[in-house]
Length: 466
Ligand code: HEM
Figure 1: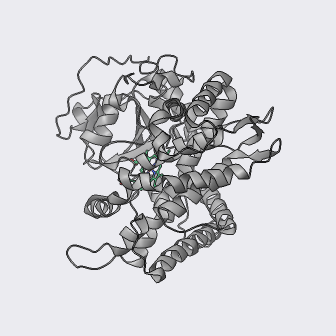
Figure 2 (figure 1 turned 60 degrees about the horizontal axis):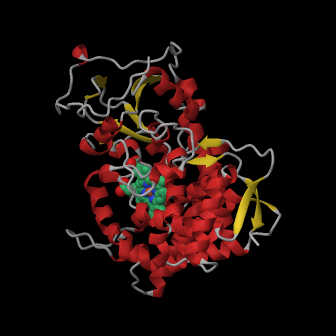
Figure 3 (figure 1 turned 135 degrees about the vertical axis):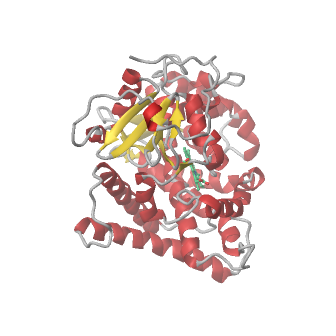
């Protein structure tokens, strides 16, 4: 039976004390295989998660072999996990373990005092003023991408968006261009590492990377290719001796307050790799899904075009145009509601806890999924409908955590403002002169890789407006 969310009810009470299992209520759970539990659901988690919430309510218990997990979809409980009780909801999860194989201990994957120190060092690079100064480079990258569109020719729009956002993150945050050949190497590495991380997640019985299986050897080769590019960027910047105010400069010049030492090369590598990877695929996905939705909803596309014509009248956007690109931003907000690039966020409590009256054991997994919560009918009427009006100025969300494409609490995405400014300006740059049509019959299938991407890319055709 589906539990109806009562949004007027006060947030669930948390005592802050571990609950003894004997007195604890277990959350509802669908029938599972006696041996592997609900492991099969991991094959198609996007569909399974939506069905689970619909059938069993806002806290659902799952069993993956010996591992207990809960899917939590009440926004006040999402807030508890990500914000109010973030102290006990840590990142020692299977997914993070996989990510660490590629990213090491960077901002996304590290925890505790070490994470806090690194976050404080990186934060100034993401201040609004600093981002504003990067907008000309973002727009130039958009114009370079636009120049590659050949009218009427089929191309992979998702690949083009990945190339574009990689270009942006490399030139703006890391102060280094990225050659075509390097971009191809990154693309191949991201594809393989993502697919491999997923495979490992869905089948937890995996040999460590040190065992030279063909799969492991390929993983290590791709990782070494990424390392070579990241170290090239670091070396180039070191040799130039220029102290810019981009992120790479901040990282290079930061010193430990206690020892006065600079970051080690290994640490620098992990931070740069994190920004490099976390900073481009997510935004590329948001733009890709935006063009899918615009191709499916001509009335929205037309309204967007009207705004772009009125505000820009054929010229490229600038930073000053951002406040007037209201509908452009609404389109992006609504796209990220239905297709949140970070489709689920996982945590593991370091203490026993209780969520919504149900027992959450220490060491288990807790999923809070923007994909599920942002399609919750109690929070968004007609949840499957694409309607940018939901985000019109003056409208209010049913709950702060009804919409959280960038996460929340202390681990809120550090690149949120950067990504929103970038995506708005790029959408304006690209949608102003072209319409993008999906090739008829091309199947658009969301894939829950590490991020939510269109499986097999997007075959589209660029049609210039006259
Ligand atoms: C549409 C684009 C983006 C989306 C949807 C997105 C989403 C997210 C989410 C949900 C988290 C929280 C993960 C968690 O709590 O476990 C996160 C963290 C993070 N994101 Fe983003 N992100 C985007 C763009 C970016 C960009 C452009 C950058 C960098 C330039 C970036 C860098 C990071 C980093 C470093 C973290 C870890 C922050 C920390 O824990 O201190 N992201 N992102």
